[in-house]
Image 1 (cartoon, rainbow over the protein chains, first blue to last red):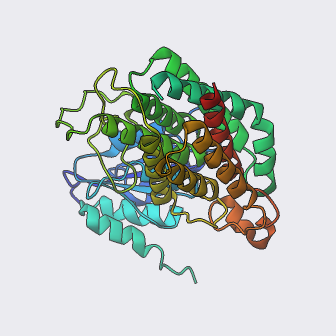
Image 2 (spheres, rainbow over the protein chains, first blue to last red):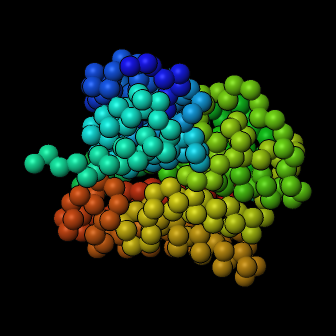
Length: 130
Length: 250
């Protein structure tokens, strides 16, 4: 397939640095090396919690100008992510962390619009495993 | 109440939070993740340093810098929540000091640390605009303006966290204290008396969280087992009002 010129970026916001990093790695494994997924996990000193500065840096890293989807795990990740919301450019997907990350990354990798990627991420809520 | 007063309030808050750090953490250990005291203490210690490094011009600037620093340094849910509260207050005070509509200044380049703008969830201001900066020396805050600033803080916290009164959160202290302050300001009370009333309402509100079942945050996972414990966020909110009352007493 041809790699789309611009893609929606995805930022995974977690309390855990390792969880965000590995979830991002898994999403890239599944969606392809061309997708723009960045982790923002843990506090600045590597502890359990959320860092607004890490989220800001991750957004900047993946933003190609057609939108960024933030996928938080829970609690302060959600609150921190909400501080960055911008209508029609930086949006939060209220979805299961791993499943949402993967379905958003797969769609983002096709060059889909922000709205389409967001819907795809939200469909991850409905996926049944059995 | 001038910038010096608000700086003194924040410094007193930092002192009171440090003195109550272990108490807050113990409250949080019962129903949360045992980091509320530590997180807030780390945040306010950073605020102290930030205020010392960049003495702010207006009361609004002091509170906006306080909020931004809390968002960047706390790491837990109290960072975005208290950060939003202080930033909303800062924006409200600076807007009150400058009644004419603010000119659409170009945002300064390189928003240090790229912490998001003071508008929170859904309400966006231009990136880099740390609220509305009032003219230098734009300085005395009235009791009514302070009450309105707390109303802005409460609205910001509610929008961000989605908590209502009775959910066993900081809103259970902040909302009654804000109402008491508004009533006192409208009634023409002296600042000390008004802040007494606000503090009493915050403490009562915090105490009243004990029998509640949590509906927000980690404590909500505990269901009925969250009953019987004071909410740490409501407790720290009461401390912030205690610091305000102490500074007003001089």
